[in-house]
Image (cartoon, rainbow, N blue to C red):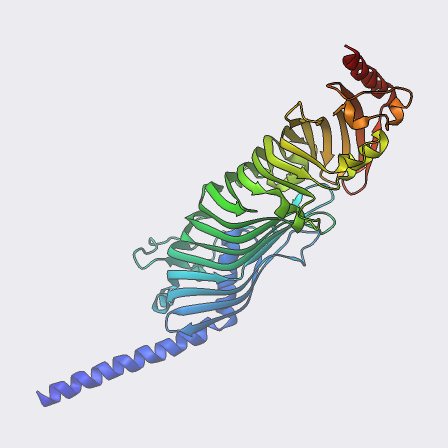
Length: 453
């Protein structure tokens, strides 16, 4: 018995030494250029784009750590990264590598970053395309979970991940002038990923700390479930916070079709406009009010700006305007200096997005019987250009003989009103306001006639 016990102990010790030696051999193999090249080839096939890995190593018994991940842009900016990742940690069964198979238990990606760049023709620069390897023979890797294994003779690699995590991610969309149109920071996600024979299937939950659109528009605490199946990305229930209000919506894009068509729907409730004005570098009391809006957009991701179209409605209540350059210019022309500082119970409007312009079908202030009533229509270009036409209706008492239109006419206080047409051109930063004098005079006469009646 004693000899048998010694023999068993020696056997177990020998097995332990073999396993330990195998572990160190596997760690050394994972650090070789051969394994890194094999991993680069497999990942490149998965994303159909050239991928470079700075280093691949085994940090623990069952964890492979990849550092310095880079996915290249397509020409003419092939030297510029489309996507990067700081660290990729894969919880893996090292013993499966002996069978040219990688068995993944979980995966975690730290600080991934993706940058989309708009070209001069309006297209969006995507990753450089790479033809998939038709066959890698003995170098083929099959990747499975602990519950599944590759079928005999199956080439390529197969991924089924029950636990995938992304932390501290970043996404940015730059226009032709390298100005940021969209910046999403603090991206986190967890879910499952399946990949086999060029098809990626993923479901999970996405969280984003903050999204900044344009110069300053900020949406925070964004969450949504997501799925990516048959090359269709679907976010069916987006929610977030926007300047004291709530945002809800959905997004879908088909990356399997030419130019990647997309659909976006958003609804905003209770947004404080003053906070938005402050973020854009203006005084928060420049425009105050509570905004509600509904909008739908569609277009093509690869031709985002020129292809996008949409429509929507908005309303703002408890509106206070201070120091408006447009109303201030109108006030100087009409002899109403206080017009730049105005209050409305509400402002309502509808718009259409097409040809990179917002076309306002109608913007109107309420109540109509207010001392100042505005109706405006026209276009606002995404480059800040203005082409607006409107009518301002003023109580005749506001203009009490000061207006250059009524120098020769004495207007007594009463219920008479005057409707005066105007135009606004130039840019949002430097608007140019003018009054059509002939029509304005006609409006003044009508107002006078109302008083006489």
